[in-house]
Every structure is written in C-alpha cells, then in structure tokens.
Length: 282
Ligand SMILES: *[C@@H]1O[C@H](CO)[C@@H](O)[C@H](O)[C@H]1NC(C)=O
Image (cartoon, protein in one colour):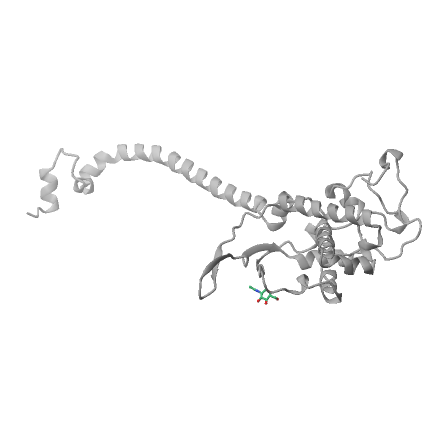
C-alpha cells in the first residue's frame, strides 16, 4: 500500500534506514555533519586515484612513444648496425615464397647468360662501399680495419653482408655438379683462381650461409598439400607466407654507393700497426 512521503517520514521518525527520510528537511539537517565528514575522506581518495590514473596513462603514452618497436629499433635489436638502417627503407612486407618443386624460375635455370643476369641483378657482384669514419664504430669497424686515404674521402671499404650471402649462394649454384664445367671453362669471377682456391671459396660460402641460416632459424612451419587426383598423396607445401625486409632498398643502397671501379694506387691507407697485419689469409 502506497504511503505518502510525509506520512512515511512521520512513521519512520528516529529510523535512519529509510532513504526517503534523507530528503526530509529535518533529517537532512541532522545528517549533514556526517556527510561532510565523508567528503573530507573521499576528496583526497578521489584525487589520489585520479592522479595515479593520469600518471599511468601519461607514462604509458610517453613509454610507448619512446620504446615503440619501430622496424628500425627492432632491426637494430636483432642484427648489427650499419648506416643502411638509417638510410634505406626498413619496412616489413608480406611475401609469398615460391616453393615450386617442379616449375623452375629464372634463378634455377641451367648455366647460361639468362640465369647469370638474374643473379647479377641481385647485386651479388657489387664493389665495396665506403662506410664513413663517423659510422665505423657503430658498424663494428675498428682502427685495425682497412681504411681509405683521407684525400679520397676516407672511410672504411665494406660490403653488405646480405649481398655477400647471395654472392655465396650464387657461387654454390655455379658450383653445382651440373653447372660447374660451364663456369670453370668460362674462368671468370671466382673461377679465375686455381681449383684448390675455388674449393676454399665454395666451402667458405657454404659455411657462411649455414651460419646465417642458423643465426635466425625461420620458425614458420610447412604444411602439406594433396596432389594426384587419381591416388591422392601428401606433399610438403613450400608456398608459405613470410614477412620480409625491403631487399630492393638494401640492394639499391649498395649499388649507388659502390666505390669506383678503378682507384688510384694509394687509395688505401697503409696499415697503422704491424700487429694489424695477419701472416696469412684468415
Ligand atoms: C613459382 O614460379 C614458377 C616459375 O616461374 C611459376 O610457374 C609458378 O606459378 C610459381 N608458383 C607460385 C605459387 O607462385
């Protein structure tokens, strides 16, 4: 049964349990001191919570700005620095590998000018670049390394590791049992050397590629596909997706900075310390 407010307040006089009572002038007055006590308690608590929240949000934002894992920061974390990281695109792209077993692309063709041109276009035979003295230390170059005479601009002659890996893979390709005779007879590049040196060159290349692949093992996985409609059989699916650097940007960086083909006799600074000179090719 509905009881009018006034009546109820009369009924409930002395009882603090009714909420409606708080609206009653008399009750409100009597409750006032305790409410301002609460205020005194809640304002500092509220300010503390608000300040903490604000500091957290601000801190998170500042932190995310400073430590955001940009591609460049990430790359500096997982590989050696060189000015390429500053001067060439460091973006990452999704790439589908062509894992065809039976269909040969240009890089897989038998020895000849076409396949050679394809590999050449990757920058496998680029000449050195000059790493400026200011970038040397960060790039892992020490005073023991070979330097260019300051009258020719100074700096350290150097090659991009990634292009050397491809150079090596290309030498392995040329050394495959079905390609070897062709390149050996041509006698150019690595095949100018005598056979014992070619062998060292090839095994050096094999082992560098091994170490590079083991340095960053690809933890993606290869699933399997069905082939043969008549009698389905499983076969590894090598056509997988990958996240790749911009190879073209790295290649171009190295291409544009190649040191001149012919350089003066005194292009290189002589060794500073005889301790820096090895007895034999390391
Ligand atoms: C891989 O390359 C071959 C030869 O160029 C081509 O025929 C084939 O369609 C390619 N496969 C994929 C999955 O792109």
